[in-house]
Amino acid sequence: MSPKLYCLSLCFSICSISTFVGSAIGQLKFREVGTVRPASNEETGDDVSGEAVGTANKAAPTLEPRGLTITKVSAGDGVLPRDHNQKWREYDIRPYTSRVTTTERPEQAVIDWILRETGTEVWFTEPFGILNAGKDTLRVYHTDEMQSVVRDVVDRLVSSRAESHAFGVRLVTVGNPNWRAKALPLMQSVTVQSAGVDAWLLSKENAVILVGELRKRVDFREHNSPNLLIHNGQSQTISALHPRNYTRSVQLRENAFPAYELEMGQIQEGYSLQISPLLALDERSVDAILKCQIDQVEKLLPVNIDVPTVTTSRQTVQVQVPQLVSWRLHERFRWPTDQVLLLSCGVVATPAAERTPLGLPKLLGADRGRADALLFIESNGKASQTLLGDQRSADRSSPNYRGRY
Image (cartoon, rainbow, N blue to C red):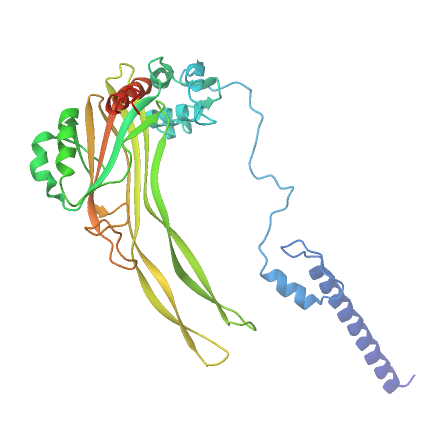
């Protein structure tokens, strides 16, 4: 073979080998990329190119293999820890749960009041503890000190004295806080943690006098019936809410008529008051958790938005942004049952729609008012005695025609 033919043959062989190796490497790379599954675990088709698959998987998160064990888990020795001399106790709460028929889970009140007395963190940190309640039995595993606290709470609930009690809960508003000028000598101040809230104690006689004086004012309003029947330890809620509708936003639509759609919103205006009382064993004092919230739409601020139309180039629609005024109270109080607790929430949004001097509600869109919200709370004794007293009062007040009509 001549030198020229030998060189040409050698070059051709080298080119063939390079092409084969490049093709093999390309196929190898394609197969490696093709084995990667997307994050959605969906199967990829055979017609998807390696470039497309690689691009999609660059954005996919890196997932740990399912079989990889990270946290060490053991079965333990099957014995409850006793590093702090914890004790296991079971409390019979059937005398309490059998009386409460207004809720399907009366035992929840037992758990709630125990957590209010002990705090929540003591059951999820050292020392190890267990708190569990069923319909009949409360099971507790904790130290002697914590068992003593739990025992006191359970005794206050299961006591035979702890039947339904009548509580007077009266929510009123006064337009001007100057009522305090004459009322302060009748009241004794109480420490309050919530900002802007004042509290006092009054004798029941002085409370009657104060309410009578407030009723003489033209800016006085009463917002609820004053008597509630509440099982000891349970919660009762009184509320007066009404919806306030407004145009929340506008959604643009393509290839549709009209080219936009108004999105409506709704806000619940009014007040909600929840009380959870717990009487002492001697019934001389009462603890109560109070949750009160007032929401008011002060006004709706208009915003004009341009939307496309078919006949004209642009059209303006109006959406509304609510200007809200809200107030919240969540606190625990303790006071003697022979006295009345009075709370002043300060000058806040009125719990209901403000009315004109003629008693008519103000027109929609008018500015909403402010008022000093007052809450009177008192214990009226056992529900059976209160109902009997109310019935006797009603019988005495009803006329007796002695069969003449």
